[in-house]
Image (cartoon, rainbow, N blue to C red; front, side):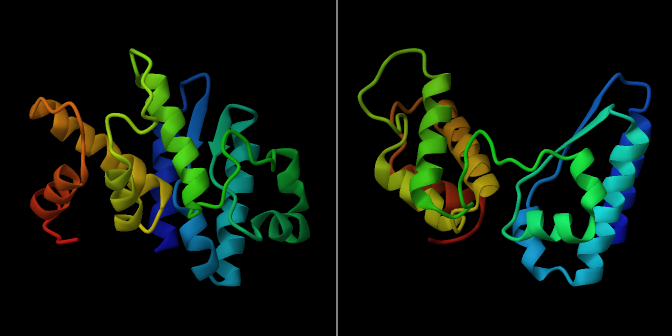
Length: 179
């Protein structure tokens, strides 16, 4: 499983080798880290170290830092710290904390709003947001993807508010699941 994924990353980086910089965004490592065996963790980190080293400052990797990953890197791959800034920035959160996830979603929604509104989740109701969180087990990438898709659905329907009913319809009709 890990080998084909890393091979596709190499192909992608090689395809863009003529670019001045390459940004590599690694998502869901926080969900995989605890399931990875020691050799898989080592393989992944060895790959990352070599990729960043060979990139000679032209490649940037952005990824979440799973619990225990920094300590593992410092113990087994101390050279990686020369290439990697191990600080948690932007939103320092555990990927499944609803309070932190709410703050992030509120920030994203506020950034895209044209006017001031008193409702922090607008165009969503709070019930709709909680349903999205629960439907994704509060995993950030799923929450953001579903939020985007539900906003798109609401735009097509010319809805002003996205409530729990619209959100349930999205999951029932577009994802063929019942919540």
